[in-house]
Each structure stands twice: as C-alpha cells, then as structure tokens.
Length: 174
Image 1 (cartoon, rainbow, N blue to C red):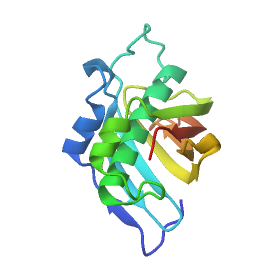
Image 2: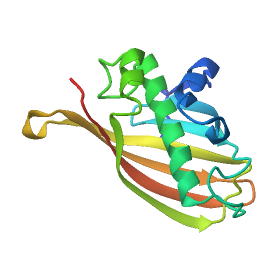
Image 3: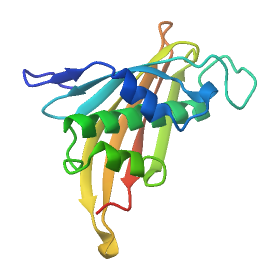
C-alpha cells in the first residue's frame, strides 16, 4: 500500500465491530481490532486476531484454511462496514449502514478464494491485512452486482506467513 499525504486512518470502532461480528457464534469471533486506512490508491484494514481454539477440529497448532477464510470474512465485513460508514470505498457511495446490514450475509459472496501458506501461523495471536484492489459495477443480463478484487495476508511474531487473493460479488444491489 502506498502512503500519501491524503491517507486517512480510522481506529477500531468497538460498536461497529460488535455489530459486524453479531452473526458469528461466540467462539468464532476471531477479529479483535481493525484499523482502516483509506488512501489515494486503495482502502485497507490492518487487524489483530485471536483464535483460542478451533471451532471445528482438534488443535492443529497452526492457522488452517478454514480459519483463514473465517478471519478473512470478518476482516472484509468490518472493512466494508467502516468504508460505508465513512464513505471510503468506490462502488459503495450510495450505501448506508442499513444497506450493509441487509446485504451482509445473503448478498456478499466469495466467488474465488486462494491462499498460500508459507510458514505456519500461530492462531492464538496473529495479525492480518486486507485491501480492496478494485471494485467495479457489472450488469450481466440486467442484474447489477459489484465485483471486487482483494488481497490479504496474515503473519505472527514468529515469522509465520500466509497470503492470498479473493474475488467478491455483492449481489442483489439496486
């Protein structure tokens, strides 16, 4: 991410974070904080995560692909909600937070998700970052949707690393 004089940074909004994570089971709320940065070239979030224990499998000792996906969802939902709240992200200029809450679960789809596990990441305490690379409106067959390209990465204090890309589709939009 390129830093410029016009970058704006937003600290974690605890009330917004709580509302974003409301659909998750208590033991699956991994996202603890998120600092959003809006710059000239992109909008991103830098986050802190804690996974005390896996929600579905015995302890593997490292962050696994299911947890990577859940953490990505939480990071992405927060980044979109904060961007809507602050008017930061192209494509969402006309959205309100009520629009986001209405679309959060049924209409935000991960169309493609890819990950590279480079070194094991400690799930008990790790950091993550995601950014929106592009958001474009498409209207195939007269049914508009937003197509978003994103990238993400996770790391820990012991050199663990994971990164990847995800394509999102925001469907059923006006």
